[in-house]
Amino acid sequence: MRLTRYFLPVLRDTPKEAEIVSHQLMLRAGMIKQTAAGIYSWLPLGLRVLSKIENIVREEQNRAGAIELLMPTIQSADLWRESGRYEAYGKEMLRIVDRHERDMLFGPTAEEVITAIVRDSIKSYKDLPKNLYNIQWKFRDEIRPRFGVMRGREFLMKDAYSFDMTAEDARKAYQRMFVCYLRTFARLGLKSIPMKADTGPIGGDLSHEFIILAETGESQVFCHKDLIEGAVPGADTDFDGDLTPIISAWTSKYAATEEMHDAARFEAEVPVDSRVSARGIEVGHIFYFGTKYSEAMGARVQGPDGAMITLQMGSYGVGVSRLVGAIIEASHDANGIIWPVPAAPFEVALINLKVGDKDTDGVSADFYGKLQAAGIDVIYDDTDERAGGKFATMDLIGVPYQVIVGPKGVKAGEAELKNRKTGARETLSFDTALAKVVGAVKSERVLV
Ligand code: ATP
Ligand code: MG
Picture 1 (cartoon, rainbow, N blue to C red):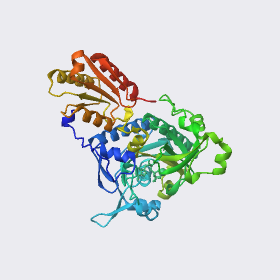
Picture 2 (picture 1 turned 135 degrees about the vertical axis):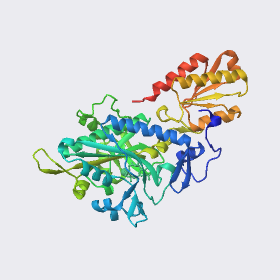
Picture 3 (picture 1 turned 180 degrees about the vertical axis):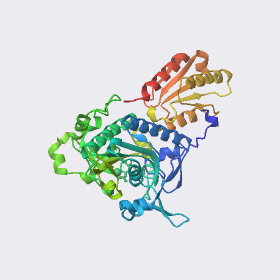
Picture 4 (picture 1 turned 120 degrees about the vertical axis):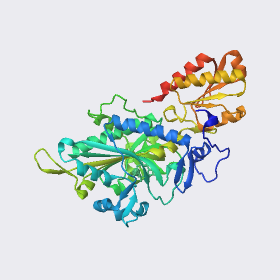
């Protein structure tokens, strides 16, 4: 992408309305624009990041055996009356009346919709187990939308729903999502910690929140410090095999959110110097809730002996749009965002320091073509802005690698390669610079 043709409305000053660094940087980097409280347009740069995160979430869901579908944003109130949640859900639900005076709503979650789909289409135990997911916009009329996309009213969520015959099978489905989530967040460069959580209005008896530690987090959390560096299961994990050893390793040490915290247990189980009490951001939440919805909505299948069995269910959410902010909270410096390669809007920024100079233009164009041919996401700064401004913009938007081409270097057959994260700069021959940056990007695309 040539910067002269792109849409990148960066701001030089920090917007006053933004309280936390991720919100400030997303506005400054031209990633989002607010259209109403807690409702944002995703500008081109922001959308690139959102799409990359979405794809990683999708790849890991698929790897764990979940199947993608797409449910509507607008749901019928009648479905929620069947489950008994229509009245119970409260003011967070955006209720809509259509032209025929029918009660509709903008979905805050989709247990009812998916349960109706499965109830109407799956009749036999032979068609189980199933885990169906979608990545779709949700609306919750949060009392206090804040921190930009971290607590929006409209936000993108991955929500998966598992259906099993027995509680034992449902537990296995829960374990698959547990492992899947560890991998998903690690692939985004995040250290997530599963913590025992309250099940809230969704109900049920088994639940974990996946928390990223950050000072600006909204939850108070407590855990053993070993969990921060816990081993993440590899891409070769057998999701059909026994995942209990992985789950045990991650759940045997103390980790709980405030609602579930037991100070006495924490102090008894965790040595003083291993106690972590910190703020955290909830990026994912998994629940096993048995027959709560299937019972109310009549989702039953015929078992092997002909008897009808009420389905066992779980639900599994990831805050896809919240993750954009969470990654920035975890990875930034005074100059701006530092994207890990897998989530970066562009992997390489090619900076032409003297647009209009024939030789510099020629070498830059050559780099641009070769980076594109190598399959790298490259933003080519072909504007006539001064050098300082160009560096500041690329640092702000957080592109992991910069290739800098200037007239002096061109005469010597050299370009500069800068690493956004370490700040390290090295002067290299054209071919070496190209090979090195392509190699670095490709090796960092897959972190686990
Ligand atoms: P919270 O406790 O933060 O309000 P929740 O427990 O109500 O979240 P879930 O129903 O578990 O949320 O939704 C699944 C995921 O969706 C959450 O783990 C979070 O990452 C994300 N999420 C929930 N509410 C919002 C929101 N208002 N804005 C952005 N992401 C959200
Ligand atoms: Mg939650």
